[in-house]
Image 1 (tube, rainbow, N blue to C red):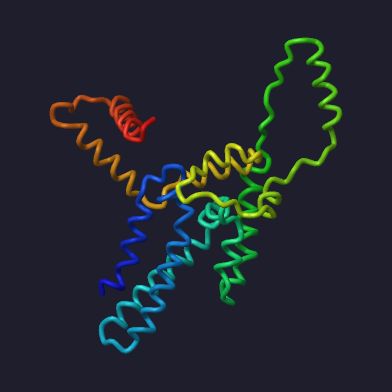
Image 2: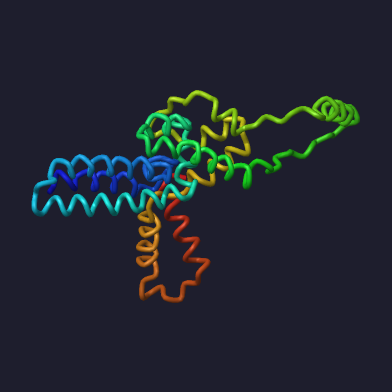
Amino acid sequence: MEIILKPFQQVTKALEGNSEGAHHGSIWETLPAIEILLRHIEKKKEQHRSHPYLATCTNLAWAKLEKYYKIMNNTPIYGAALFLHPNHRFKYFKQKWTTKALKAYQKSMLDAIRLLYNEQYAKTSFDSAIDASSEEEIEMDIVRSYLHAGMKEKDEFEAYLQGAPTQLADDANLYQWWATAGSPRLAQMAYDLLSIPAMSAETERVFSGAKLTISPNRNRLTEDIIEATECLKRWYKAGY
């Protein structure tokens, strides 16, 4: 039984981190984690198929994992977050979704991620204000505007999709990578998705910490002071 449950403990510990730098607890790790457990339980189902007790346990565990795996695939967020990890991009789905059933989902997953980008990020404007402190600079800006007019804008999504995976260390800060990627719209999508924690463990820790802050001797603290205190505490522990 311990051998069967050990991967569940390991996955839980891996995903309950505070997701600093979008690793060890970020939502992009959720899909691979579920797939690891599904493959693990499938092996145990075969191994214990004649056991009077473990056969039932492994079958029920697999059914529950399969249920939530299908729910996860009904929303593009989990796949999109994994796609936005520079190490994996869409290569992950091509390498891991190799069974006949999963291969059929490759295109629909890519289409869903693309649709999410098109609807919420593709039309975002990042035009910076022109600091024209002289007539010469104004004239140059007019020239640049004329030269750039009508030029086809780079499709950030397609460029990233066709690009080769980037080999980053496991503890690399993904936000810093995206800050220098030269794709502001896709970077905004990455900031939004990669900052989502895989679990609510860190949020629960904040609630527990707030309970210690609001002691009987501090019962007149207002919401803004409590919020500021908890933020300062977390920033201090994070070394900011």
